[in-house]
Image (cartoon, rainbow, N blue to C red; front, side, top):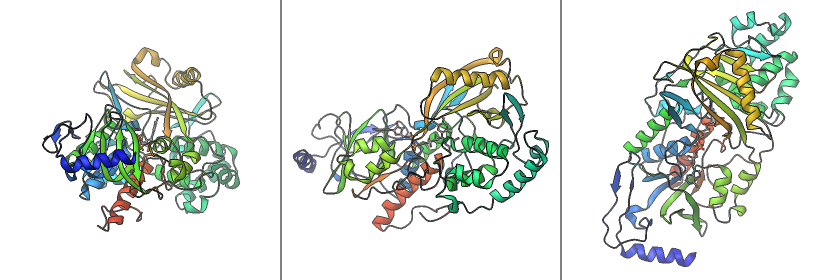
Amino acid sequence: MARLHLRIRLRSRILIIVKKFPSICHKPISLAVIRIPQPKGMISMTQNTKFDVAIVGGGIAGLTAAVYAAQAGKRTIVIEKQERMGGRAITNHKQGHYFNLGAHALFQGDALATFRELELNLKSGKPANEGHGLWKGRLSTIPLGPKSLFTTPLLSIKGKLEFAAWFAKLTKLQTHKYDQISVREWLEGSVKDPMIRNIFYALIRSTTYVMAPDFQAAGPVIQQLQHSLHGVTYIDRGWGAIVEELRQRAAALGVQHITKQKVVAIEHQNGAVQHIRCEDGTLIEADHIIAAVPPAAAYQLVANAEATSLRTWKEQAIEMTSACLDVALRKLPSPKHQVVYGIDQAVFLTNQSRASHLSDEGAQVVSLIKYQGKGSDADQDLRDLEQMLDLTQPGWRNELITKQYLPKMTVSYDFMHLERQQNPGPAVPEISGLYVAGEWASHGEMLLDAATASAKRAVQQIISREGTGKAYHEHRSIV
Ligand SMILES: Cc1cc2nc3c(=O)[nH]c(=O)nc-3n(C[C@H](O)[C@H](O)[C@H](O)COP(=O)(O)OP(=O)(O)OC[C@H]3O[C@@H](n4cnc5c(N)ncnc54)[C@H](O)[C@@H]3O)c2cc1C
């Protein structure tokens, strides 16, 4: 390996090479002039083509990191293995209807603040905070505000008073005090009425996508509940619009990208990153490399990762998955039931079309989620979700235009739980110039908020190590 690197270095000194590869806006950019042919797929190792920052993975974490790195004047490239950028945030445009990869909502956290800071041109809608609960096969108003608390049949008068007191208290809780206890310890220890606890478990599932109350840390969950009290935001034309905006912003800043290019190794020598190796043999040299890929992928890409923190981060990770059914309906058979939280079942239904544009044909795009624990049965999950539709939208099959079923989507590769030994990143301390980003690299944030926050942490660390000052304004605290 060392000899190969030496050979590459020597070649690069005498060759001025050019490699064409697509820019982020799909137009090829010529980086230099080819004088002597380079082996296929090899990117020049000259000063001309060495990147300041190379990012593996073009999901929202990778794209966010790319924008901030480029804003800080860094020569930046993103390498994505799929045909299009976006990772789990892509949107499928099917017969005029926009399907995310399952129900996706923005909370009032880091991601929304980041997109506002970047002035992304996103159109969106905020639905009213109201819905129904599914309990023992029946649908009832679920308490999500003063009016629904008054009308819900799920709680006794005493329960309603306790619930009201709880909601008032929730906004003021210092979340960090609850970081070391589980969601179950928190709820069982502080909420008397068992039905209030059941409702909270349902709300927590739908705002965190995690079904692990015995080891999910309560502090970050309370913070997510606080965010959700401000309502959620649904994006017109789905989350693909966010991806497209970030992609365009990165392109305007000169970020380059390669798609359909799988990275097979992040190589390092003498404790510092050297380059990225792609499946077709392309080498991309960079001073800093951000692995914006899942923890197991980051571990696998880095030689001798077992001697680094990547091992701990991979081993401590607990993956959460969901079955996702999305349907486009000509009209809603039961307009009353646009949002339904399963209370005694781990299911959730939301009609995001009530607040955002998800169909060019004026159809209603309804998303259903089944939260999965260990072991899942794709056929059974689909039956459960269809049953939920039968109950909430009877006759939906007559209105069906098209659907999408994803039996097992990874919603998060890790989250804040009590078995965590370390919060991952931003730097991999054992290898200079190597960083991680992604929703699993959370320092307390949840889902997409963790993806954007971890991306910014990585760029911030790159910049602060180089002593070039701050790259961006941090919304809540300095990372
Ligand atoms: C069903 C579902 C519902 C969700 N709902 C919400 C929600 O309501 N709110 C919320 O905030 N979040 C939600 N999320 C989570 C959110 O989608 C993710 O947190 C976010 O999209 C993760 O972005 P990322 O960049 O960290 O990872 P990813 O999107 O997974 O991006 C990683 C990228 O790396 C690429 N890659 C991997 N290996 C390689 C390699 N070797 N070479 C090159 N490229 C590679 C992958 O192809 C991928 O594009 C949901 C997710 C799902 C699945």
